[in-house]
Amino acid sequence: MKAPSITTKTGDNGETGLLGGERVPKDHPRVHAVGSVDELNAVIGAVLAEERMPETLRGRLEQIQRTLFEIGAALAFAPHDFADDVAALERQAADLERSLSTLCHFILPGGSRAGSLLHFARTVCRRAERWVAALNGEDRAHPQILIYLNRLSDYLFLAARAVNRDAGVEEVEWKRFQ
Image 1 (cartoon, rainbow, N blue to C red):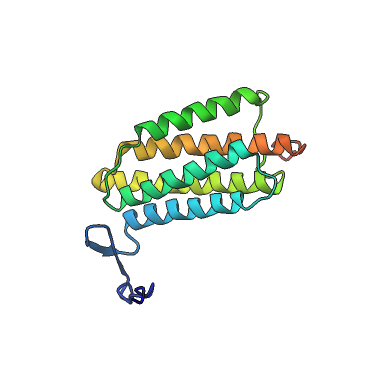
Image 2: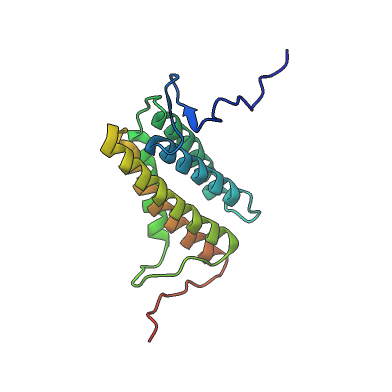
């Protein structure tokens, strides 16, 4: 039996299908939210492609990818309870934060390749959060998704710092031009 083609041609008129069969315009806030979460998942996949990734962080990022997939499905109307995911992410972020020096200034995103990718993932996460917030203004997505994305952006920032520290790359403090 031949597998169905990925090309359905059903989106050629600028609409896409959601779980449950509803069709919406491709510029609908729900589609932006789902797409931003998918993009975030892909950026985290790029981070995981890095060879020198601590195994603990690798495992956590792989779990985050699974949760992001569930979030995408939930945003497309497949309900899911994210309370346990939020709690796990909060514990992991607290562990990372305890392992890092106290940050007393803004830092520029960058550092090692993996650290830079984690900073990039953080910015994509913030965009996903903005789209979920916009969607909430329209039809109240699961409120735990916003909480999870907010915690995840913090976690990704801390992970970038930890990866850069482990790579021996110093953080670059942001300073105003004089």
